[in-house]
Length: 114
Image (cartoon, rainbow, N blue to C red):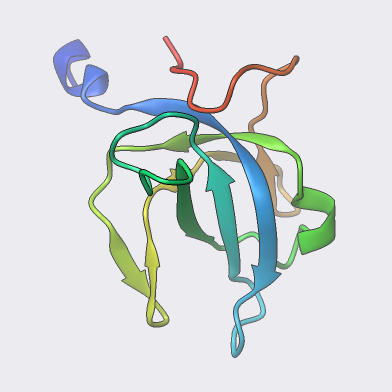
């Protein structure tokens, strides 16, 4: 088990997917550009981040555009197949692949999960 204080260190946010495309050379990786609202750690001009996610076998990129998803926003960036991922999306194990966690109604991009 982790302590409540350790759990509070994870910054969970709702973001909107602006673009999605397959990563060349991978069957499961997708490159997502997400709207993070007015986050100062995102691209300051556009409020966007790039996330590389292993959901390409379950989700078509076109389906994801405009969807809101939940991410862990304060992970250190990581290089995946030469691309920088600036967060991690949350998904449940649906038995037949990942199932994205989404809010039940629209919220502003960058909204904190509390």
